[in-house]
Image (cartoon, rainbow, N blue to C red; front, top):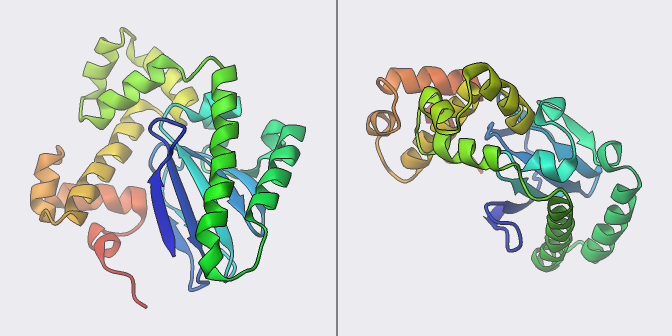
Length: 246
């Protein structure tokens, strides 16, 4: 049971909640984002930006609340370069120290209650609001996100080339690569590939044939899209687009 919505307090962020079925690992696709997570089993965690798909394994009935920060915003919230968290899931206490303990107590108090599914949506919304509040406060204390990260992510998400993006932000290739690793966890070419894959899969989920989705998002053809998805997601796009089996 997975649900997501736009965050109410942080522009561009996404709040998601889930209750694990225990049916097997869940494939989490790379998206250039950092997440602030709460798990009923593991507590508060930071999910760094993944280079390839992450297979998440949960215990049956484990509850999750996630705040997915837009690309380039996470470093200002967590106070670390994104590359230090790449492909990692770490306890928030390792990043924020004692502030994580206080946050954990507040979230636990908000989500505590009977285990019946009927009450979970309300409790998870209360927990998510606390995560948003804390992340927003940290972001303001840092002076907001790095404007460069916002500009680079927006241009690449719109399909601009890395060369055009570098020219627009007035940086040379090496400088853009260095700044991108700190902001996104990897260089701009990798981020561009990940964001393009997301656009193509979004079109396909909306009913656009894969061949057309490939051309509309800048792939040479459907075979090119399939190769890229296999490398980044670990499976072909048809596997990702197949409905889940009950």
